[in-house]
Image (cartoon, rainbow, N blue to C red):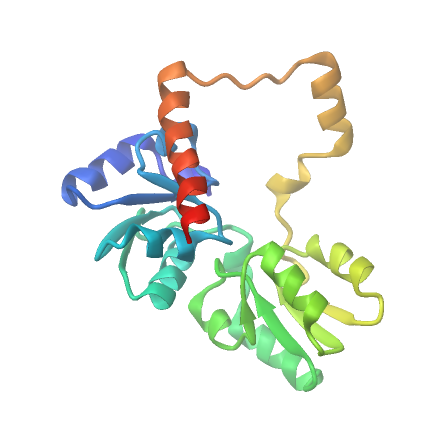
Length: 220
């Protein structure tokens, strides 16, 4: 998803909408972050946009998350790029969930805000991964249909052994996430290889956007 929005694209949208705040999801390139006003996560995106108190914001790169933020805040949220998406969450379909509900009428549905709007509309709860976990832990439902990357199911089942968790779509696997393993992390730290370097000027600007996220989150 990060590759869908370059720094040049951000600059182009800023020219089209001068003086409009730019909010970028943390899953973006450092160069793109350096061009935005503030970063956000799927968990705090609504709080961040609310805190800006702007009539209009530019938001990228996930269109579905942008749409969700607009629904929750009433702010005009312009997605940049217009059709950015999470390759995993875009796989969820309303019909699949409806079929799951028909088979399990006593189940509740928890969906990630990066899912398409039809999926969010049939969900009982919409939230980030951490928010879905908290919802599952406190829900009185004994059966939950989960619409996000299936890796979360292991954590949910471990924390809630008396509840049953069903994948809204079994093929919702993030191949990029799976590339990061404990073994690879250990070797990178021990052998100090695969070092990622960011130019100081880019790092400084990107850090400012990240720090502002923490500041605005603390204020809300």
